[in-house]
Image (cartoon, rainbow, N blue to C red; front, side):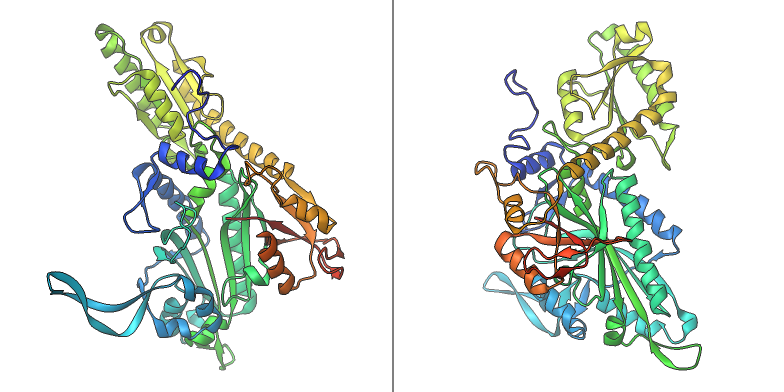
Length: 506
């Protein structure tokens, strides 16, 4: 890195946020665009993040009584047509298979057989899982069904961006069926709180929770609840959703059961999910102008140890010391998993290796050389501090303090993100101020503006659509409030029950 360049990445966040994001992904070697438009290749360092997220969430799901299953990738078109709002909501995003079998014609492979019914490549699985539940459920004794699926889905995205919006992405989708409305509504809220806890305690992402407006509701749902995060360009990211589907899908799919009173009733269903979009959220929430920053509780590698071996005669002793330290650290349990340690003994300069791990976001870097060995110390650097900041600590004391340092980094990232959101959240009571809040003040940096506006709204979808069309601003959520503050809608002057959260979003 040149003397003039003060950071590892260019451009910086405040110069060109979208390009900075791409540079973080590239520098950390997380993913790349594939040959198929809109699809991505998730590379090992990026997939390790997803594996860790899977592991934590899977444990949280099973702790709340859910089990994993798997359902087909292909969904008959007639299944989607059964729920009108659902098919209308997803129609423009569907990829459709119409042929099977290839044959050679004039030296080229061409589709040959036409399917008797087109198959939609899974955009979401409510309809095909509903068909299975209709076969399985006969009596109230068969309920509840509490299943989750880890899978990929396809939504034909027109403006792809790695992790945030891709034509194919990875996710989990929970689908449950219940005997009563109350039980289904309780399930919907329970899973929303699971997502909220996961985002806060593992991703160090503070989120707002609330209900989606009609315009942002999941197609076919009675109510959609969400967790919403603010990232560093002050835009919102919907990080997870939980849907109360009522009896809409059970009626469409024929999920019926004999009640305790002997009557034929339709089940009450829910669905809920998060995706690899969480990786994009994490990047935009915590990373800096030197690259990725990974919260320790979601990291697969917590510590990288770099041996400094300038002379051959001291190499063996240094390697023995770093191997011993690595073994000691790997024996420590950190929030349910062993501390992940990378020992980087490659024949490269220490500076090159250091910058590589900085850009990859490893929480702690440790260097040990001959002089350190003689003094019984090691140079320790933290990713939440400047790249040149390091302190010399006793090697023997590292195993006893490492977990505490990692937790300190985790808590610091959450605190920083929370303060950022609070700084850029504002109550707004005039239309003029609302428009100014969401209008870029600097033409050279059009993405830096706004944040979360807490403003009154009369509940009208027409108003919601108008604001979206004119300002590209949407209602992110209607917050849960025990004592909502009544007021006057900014746009119509009509009564408003409470303030809602407005923002530009991904």
